[in-house]
Image (cartoon, rainbow over all chains, first blue to last red; front, side, top):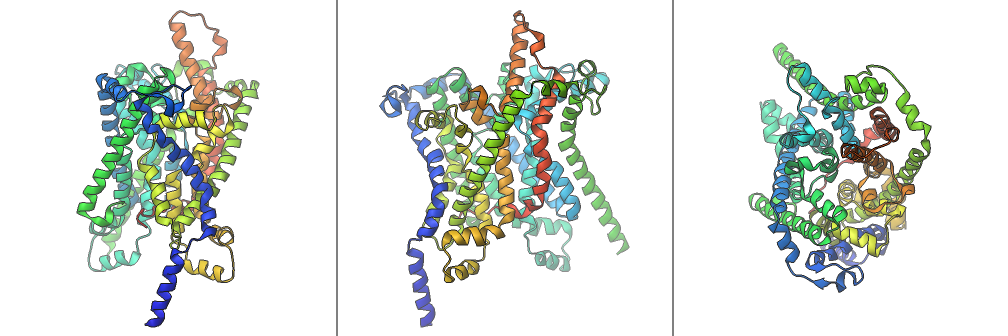
Length: 311
Length: 295
C-alpha cells in the first residue's frame, strides 16, 4: 500500500518536473506553428483599420466597422455565403456518408483487392486542382469535351458548360467526391480494421447478421472518428477548397452566381482589386462564423454524448 | 450452409463491382489527358477527346521538349521545394507530435490545444499574406513556397495519433540506460514508426509538389515558377489570348501551345509522382491513425 503511494507521489513529481529534453524536441515545430499560425492572428485587427503600409498595421488609422458595412451592404455577401454554405454542406454530407459506406464494404474484401482499389481511388487525391481543371476541361469543353460529344451522339443539344451556372453545383460536387473519396474512405477503413475481431465473432455466435453487426458494432465503433471528422469539417464549412473553385471554373465571371465562394472573393479582392479592407473583412467574417459553428456543434454533441465531443 | 455460401459470393461480386466502377471513375478521366497528349492536334480538334488517340502523334511532347529550359527550371524549383520542404516538415512535425504524445510531458495539453486550435481558427488569408510579405519578407523567395507548410496541424494530429501507441516501457527502459530524449526519439521511436513517417511524408511531399497557392500569392519571379504554377499560367495565358482575340486584338497564334501540348505538359508534370506513390501505399492503413484530441 505504502509502496504504491510513494511510487505515485514520485510519478506525480516526475510529471510536474520540466523535461528539457522533450522541450527542445518540440521547439522547432512550435516555432513554425507560432510564426505561421499565431503571429498572423494579429491580422484580426486589419479589417478595422485603413491599412497603410507606410504606417504599419498597428500604426494605421482605425475605421471601425466600415469595411464590414461595405461588405454586407453589397450583394456579394449574401451570394458568397449562400454558395459557400450550400456547396460545402453538400460536399460534407455526401463524402462522409459515402466514405463510411465504402469503408464498411471494403472491410468485406481481401487485402489484395483492397490494395488495388485503394491505389486507384487515391490517384485523384494526389492530382492537383490545376491538373484536375485540365481533366474537367477535357470532359466539358464545348466542342471537344467528352460529355458534349456524348450528348451530341445521343441526339441532344450539347450544353456549353462553361456558360451555364446552374450545372456547376453538380459538377463541383462530383469533382469534390472524385478527389476526396479515396482519402476519406481510407481514414474510416483504418479505424474500422482496429476493431477487436472478437466483438464481431461474439456477435456472430449470438446470431447477429451482417446488417446488425454493421449498425450495432461497426458504426458505433467508428462514431468518435465520424463525429470528429464531421465537426472539423463543420469548422471549415465557411472555407472552401480554393483551387477547386478557382481553377475548375476557370475563374469565369459567367459562373460566379453559383460558384463564387468566400475564398475566391477574398482572393480577388486582395490580389485583383487590391482592396485589403473588404477582403480582410470577408476573411474575418469567415473565421469567426466558422469558429462559432464548430463551438456550437461541439456543444450539441457534448450534450448528447460527452465521449464524442472533441473538446 | 451451401446456400449461405452462395449469397456470400453474390454479395462479394456486388461489392467488387461497386469498387471496380468507383476505381474506374477515379482513373479513367486521367486517361483522357494521357490519350490527348499522344493525339495529333488536328485530329483532337476535329474528333474531340477520346480514350485512345484517334491519330497517334508525338508532336506534343516534341513541342514541350523543344524548348525545355522553362519546364526544366520549373522541375528544379519544384523538386527543391518538395525535397527540402518534406524533410524539414517531417522532422518538425514528428518531433512536435511525439512530444505531444508523451503522457509524462508537463505541457502536453497546452501543446495539443495550441495545435488543435489552429485547425478551428486562424487569422485568414489576408493576415498571412501581409505578415509573410511585410514582416518575414518572403515575397519572391524560395522560402515562401516552403516555410508556410512546415507545420500542418492536421499532420501533427495524425502523427500524434500514431505515437500515442508507442509502448511507454520502451522509453522508460531506454531512460534507465541513460539515453537522452533526442536519442530515444531518433534511435528508438522513429525506427519503429516507419508507417507514420512514410504516410505523412508522402502526404507532405504531395502537398509541396501540387502546390500552386503559395506561388500564386508570393512569386512573381519567373525563375521561381513551380510546375503547377507554370501549368496554371499556361492555361491562364490561353484564356487571356482567347479573350483578346475575341476583343479583336491580333495575336501571334504560334505563341499558343496547342491543346495537345498542354495535355503533354500535364502528363510531364504529374506522371513522376503518380508512379512514386504506390510504393508507399503499403504503409497507409497503419500510418493513418486519427487519435482523439482529448488524449
